[in-house]
Length: 142
Image 1 (cartoon, rainbow, N blue to C red):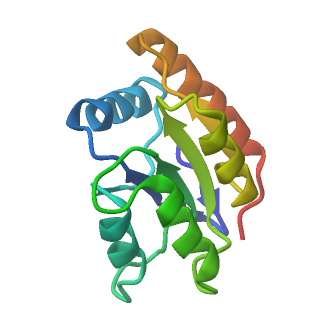
Image 2: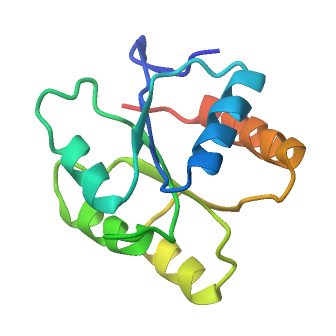
């Protein structure tokens, strides 16, 4: 399955510093037959560089974002993203191990589309990605 907007495949940006979690996302996408282009960034600074690169086309319409990362964490990244008129409309889904109420509060105040706790088992993670895909298929992207 390829999610599309205006008949163009939607690019997804994964902002994650943990190689095992990156691998799990890729494996969960494969299991759920998600074939959308996936761009990787290891922290918020790297993600902003990629998003602001004029050569990156099409721009991602979905960001999967971890919170606990070096250099620029997820909440700091979200503040920068939402302050940027060119990037602020991108849908962001937090995927993190942080169950901290302050992180959830901050994320929702920065207009995240969802806050997903990373499950401990791979099968639970695959199921979470399947649910996310069902949600994405209902959204109208511009």
